[in-house]
Image (tube, rainbow, N blue to C red; front, side, top):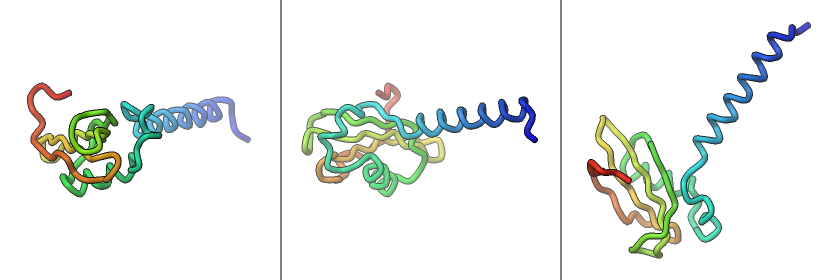
Length: 104
């Protein structure tokens, strides 16, 4: 039989895992997702192929260039940060550059 303490621990672990998963999937600009032909998952894969590393931030935004709707990812590898921009309509890499000191 499970004690009340074990039940609480299991519940708290479940809540913590849900929060971590939700934060990992969340990104700025989700309200624009219905306008995108490329999903966030597809855009992440394209961005990581362009610059392999760890995505530390991501957003979907209206910006000049391409279809005017782009995913923008900050990707870090070996303490070097790049910004990789992916066109949300075509999946084309629009930007792959070193992240400046005043990152968005």
